[in-house]
Picture 1 (tube, rainbow, N blue to C red):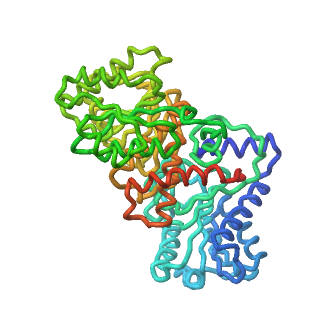
Picture 2: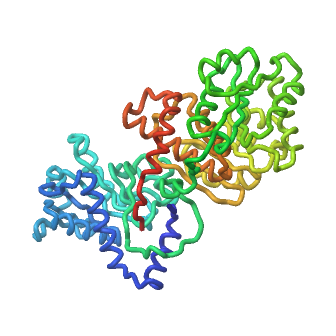
Picture 3: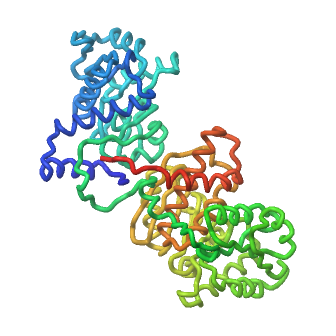
Length: 518
């Protein structure tokens, strides 16, 4: 699904009007009905008897809110409209003037089960009017007194910048946001993403066959499902590829288990761990299904250890390097020799490469490191690792800077960049960019990045191209995290919990029917 900027949305609406004959009132009718349907679904299908206050702004967003209120009233809700510019309440076709003390509005808020924020839409980027801040503050105050009061934002919470994710000090956090037509870039950037709540996409009536220019995409089941590898009935383990894992060390033995476990759980036919011989007994008890390719002992010369690894690459479709390796000088030399050996191989014999964690920190210590990695490499940095790769440039965990950073880096380095964070980004060297949603604090725990690296590796081993493998891995990994969060909550999820959840996430994605959009 496309994520759009304000200018892109304006152009889409202009084309809908001029090319498809879809008038502004018609788009409002679709938008208002979509908002009402989304709220009805949020309320488990029942709006009858619910007290709903719709805050109406002066522009098109306010018009959408009026239509929404009309549908809700037709379905049996007790709807009150407050026209902010008109300074009057509309209750059962009666109009009540609103004085400066806002007493009548306070009373309406106190009676409301749900407040709909239809004050400002995507076109507003200036600070909120002080009287609008005061109005939204009254709702926030009531919600503190009555936490069961729900807030729905129509298109986006008023005061949230649709391009940058910046928020006004008066912005009211929503429980549910209904993005009209398409999600906006500001929905998935912090701090705004924290104000969105559950994000749903509502229709404005755009033609299903309307062509759209390329741009930022939101990872969703409809995008990812066709990418997932087929599982033919006559398949065998060779059908689903082989993957080699260079990870783990005496200090961080669990990393290799998480990477190899994820590659296995995502469906790879055969996973091999390249580890020091003293660690093989440890891993056999953790992952008996894997094959083991013992390397010379860690005290052996790095070039000898690298040669042993490269000798094990026959028929391997994917290789992941980095998690838990450590950054000692012999390990850095090992990685350098492995990279040199990979570059020397013909492209047809070279496995797809993923570099993560300590592998990335080792790269950051090399001059012009991006010239040392093979083409089509996937790198999976978190913000700190990305900063080091960029020579110390600040990289946020969820801000607007990430979009440009990921795009610029992928193009400059010729790598596929998975920039991890609250909403992980996937960028291609050609400029394509995809964003994962929603953020999930349950995944903010050690080892989940190792699981992601293994998931990318496993999908590459099964034949996916790098951009598709990275995109699908991020989405499946995120879906698995959401399923765990639903059962366990925000805290206490362990990285190893994701391993058994990955196949369930795959199953759920494949079973999801295509949802209507626009």
